[in-house]
Amino acid sequence: MASGSTMTAPICLVENHGEQLNVNPEALQILDKISQPVVVVGIVGLYRTGKSYLMNRLAGQNHGFVLGSTVRSETKGIWMWCVPHPSKLNHTLVLLDTEGLGTNPKIQNSNLPRECIKQFFPKRKCFIFDRPTSDRNLLFHLEKVPEDKLDSTFQEQSKKFCTYIFNHTKTKTLKEGIIVTGSRLRTLVVTYVDTINTGAVPCLENVVTTLAQRENSVAVQKAADHYSKQMVQRLTLPTDTLQELLDVHADCEREAIAVFMEHSFKDEKREFQKKLMDTVKERKKDFLLQNEDASFKYSQAQLKQLSEPLMKSISIGTFCVPGGYHLYLEAKEKVESDYNLVPRKGVKANEVLQQFLQNQVAVENSILQGDALLTYQEKALAAEWALKKAAEKEVELLSQKYKEQQQKLEAQERSFKENIAQLRDKLERERENFRMEQEKMLKHKLKIQEELLNEGFLKKSVKLHAEIQLLKKEIAANKEDKCSLGPWIFDVIGKMLDKEMPDPNVCGTAEQAKEEAAEKEVELLSQKYKEQQQKLEAQERSFKENIAQLRDKLERDRENLQREQEKMLKHKLKRHVLEEVAAAEVEQMTACVLL
Image (cartoon, rainbow, N blue to C red; front, side):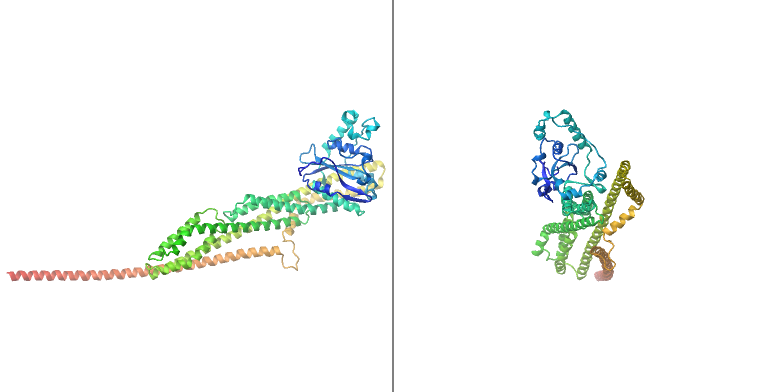
């Protein structure tokens, strides 16, 4: 059994105290721990007819179920023995032996006549047993009789009986192919007993509905837990990108939906699938927050470590010298470069860097203004260049946020599509199972009708004929409706996703409000991104204009300097020529004097 424990002896499942039936809590706990499908074998009959002996043989034991008159009247009821099925892997064989329930009037009132036995047991097999032994004294203590003391024919008959039960009994299944596990059998038992105690006849449809409510709640929890467990195992926070987390989320959500589909049934309004979607959405949001927090803390720690030399240099005044601004820029750019090389900083890496750079604006401006090596014009250009770089960082950050919002919306759309796809597959399987059940039921009713006619029950045969015709119409309608399955699914899923056909008098649902808020946030980010781009372009135009004006001014200054230099050169040349002429005249005059 799935619980890992094996029952060594039967336990009373339903106790009969006078006219009141009570379910044994200990037996319910045993069933609740069995997650495997069960094969249920029950036996009814008079005292001392070999019921308990045969059940012991099915359990592979010579004793266990108490035989005949050894049962005290106050403990009579339904006894249960759960053992691993000898031939069906991963199945549990549930043996039920009745003792003394026939004295309960409520049970008598709910016992159906022979025709109903035919209706509920379409396949019947009869076994005839010889006496186990000719010794009447041994008949009262069969559990103590050695195998070799029993009649050989009886032994062979018992062996054939057990083999047939093991090979031909099927997994307990309810309408629409719902497989019954131990825990589901527990709910059925409690519901049936409560109904019988009220004096009513149990209605299978109501029982299945009650079972579905309980099982679907469990299925939601099991699927949500699977999602969380797999996310924890597969994620390493912080993830390098948001898309990395969303991809893991998509895989885990797909598996969670499959878990829910496997364990849920009769979720006709899709309220439990919607509950799972909401739960997964909230847990995904929590993982996103954890990822952002991990990224923020890790990025801050790395940046703090890398910026320590820069901060120390600032504190001791290293950059408060002529040319210090250039040295500061080199040190700051090295911090940025080293930071960008750090791997897997996560989704908050740019935001942390942006905060760091914004915190440096005042210090950077102070160093710039105090640098005596720079002219006024150069300082103005440097300040404008710093603003341009800051604007570029802001645009880059906004672009990342916009991209991440788009990725989240796309992930949400994929989630809806995955839910629709798996729901479609499940509905197709359920429809096919329902069709097979209907055809099986039709075949059975036709057989009963034939038997009733042969036995002369004409009125009952006519009544059954009407049921058969109705069932045939249902089968035909089911086949014809198959082509419209797709639109029907989308109608159901539309209601499930809220798009839930909201009340016209109500202005939307909370879920719609969240979706609209997300869309508005994306729209706002897009607008802000566009505005920042426009500002950046304006700053760039301004910067280019200032550069152009500075270039023109420098060009004019250069031309003026060139003209001044040429003028000075001409003046010097003229003076040089005059000096040479004067020297020549002096030399000539000297020569004349000498003559």
